[in-house]
Image (cartoon, rainbow, N blue to C red; front, top):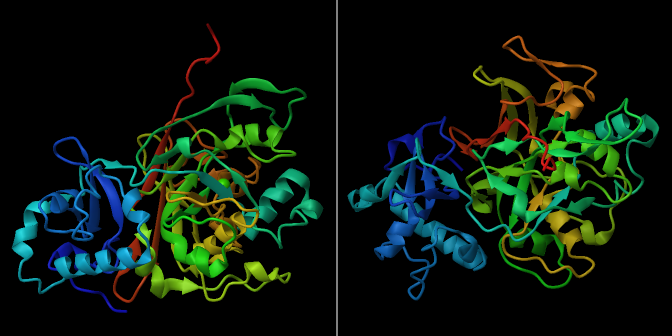
Length: 420
Ligand code: CA
């Protein structure tokens, strides 16, 4: 599909994340201080909440307060037919040739300087472990090359239940955690600030329609509303001590950042790609009836406080071994109902080469090989003041479908939280 032209000129640039082909959904702080729903178009935001209030953009004739609270969750629950007809309305409004375009100008807000907010209410958060390069690297670091890949890994999309309460929107600062940890050279555990604070480059899939009982991979794909970039902040020295036998717990409880814009499935449709060839036959319930991964180029930028950014990794979502649809289908097998607003982290996305690894744990090989930054600094793990930025985009012919930046800055640990 070629670039669809909009009457908003900045949406027609090959460099924007937000052409008319994209139309991602976000929430922002409006001039009156209230949260509003918005759609990104070029360098502007179309204020959906204000348009709905004026009766200019309704999901359905009897729905006129869907966006009143600046949250997309209720809309997400309405399902694929409503999602499609609403997108059609937006395309009509924003297309080049809309004779009533002038009427919409008062409802456009510049993205620059506008505070973005959580676009939906996270019901529950599950994080997976679906990148084979990542699993091999981490497994080798933690258990040695011979035991790197757990025996179930090629059969099960492995995951753990995280915390919805810790999910934050891009731009939120992240405080270095304290925790019970044991460094690689320590004999005994200690309670102190994390010294091995890390990022994880991931995609997040957002459940739109709810389910009860097991669903197929196709049904799971139909349930997914859209995707965000996701940074699963990780405390490696806490993780290394606590993770056996039940998996990560406090190591992943500090924060998980998501990009402010939910890119919907129709915007990504042209970029579907198959999961890599199976190294072990999957059980039938995990078979994909069609391509369900996406070709999305990804990068990680790290800027020390007050300094320029260095891109420390470049990779692509298409390297993942399991798609979000497979993960979601597996999630339901034992009867777990899935709800509108459930967030599924893909697992860290690492490519096969050293410069395509999506975590400092792998990039610095557990601290043994410091990563050189363009500023002359080096990093093994994150330092206070570091600003992390994830970016991602699917590249079309003369346009791209982007997610906007997913950023977070590391703040120093507080004083001992138990000193009274
Ligand atoms: Ca993770």
